[in-house]
Length: 243
Image (cartoon, one colour):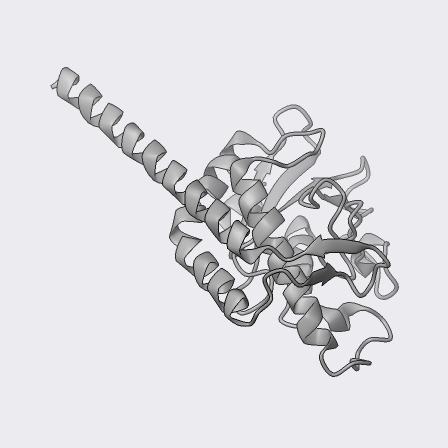
């Protein structure tokens, strides 16, 4: 934790669990120019007793209650597949690695073409498959990793630490315009009402409701503005009384 605080990772926010000293909570924000852009993805890292000789166990909590697989390597049940975690084929863990290297590796999964992360799909079988998968990820990011995270509709047993809730809530207004632009772009592409499906799952996940989602995000922004205004007013009144 000291290392992460002294040398913070870009777009990654970490806090230690309040009761379990070996547990770390992290929110990774989706990189720009990817279908994950602006999303808030919450991960829990649990270090075993013999860490750093063994890798931490990592679980994704932002899954829409276990309904969304955000990447070929990020499962709906929260499983994170990385070779350094021992959950994926390839070079394994070594003690010289750290929690920082784990978080950066996870962030690298959120790239511009996550379709190709699936083994055997390095070349798209359908010319539009990459774009279709990006459409799926982009919508789920706005719906689950933005709206649900800011609204605190997480549908999980444990709760996002208050300090990370504050960060998510604080960052949302500054990113709001880009979320609206993303919705408008997808509406102009006639994606509103189209089928929402994951090519790596046989389950059909309904339809993309971009108009509804845009309205929900706009109402959420207004709620945040009202809360911020109320806080500012109360602070001004308190300062006036003290003066």
